[in-house]
Image (cartoon, rainbow, N blue to C red; front, top):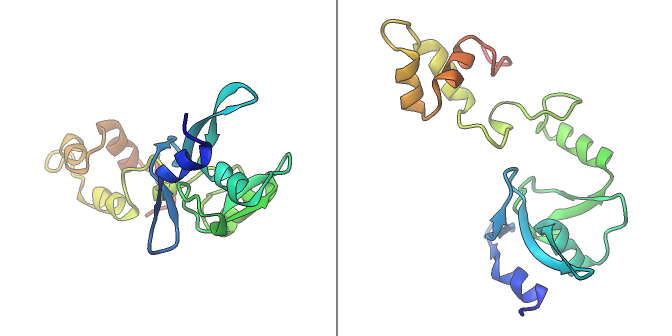
Length: 161
């Protein structure tokens, strides 16, 4: 079986911008994952936490490994820092990655968003019930009718005009 370090490097792509992007398994929220055997048990470990451990050592209990670069798939230890959960939330808030104190992502900053702010403004401007319909817009923008309906009724993207 290959050593963890060798398996780690097989899944890293160093970019010109300095990020080391994880090319292995990626979670829904954009963080890399790798299976490792720890204490005789197979576990999934977040790639940026594994990178910290491999390059910089132990992660003290209760601390998060946070990103200076705000790229969840980045595993470059120079782009990582340790902080508490509170530090991590405050960092995200300062950088505009959260909409409120509850930690909810907003608009295109949300990892599952298919629309941009520009798309939403266009949809609201163009929608005409008998001329440019919700099904037409849904097809054009690659989203469901219910997404278009929520945009038009301002149930989603409430922060936009």
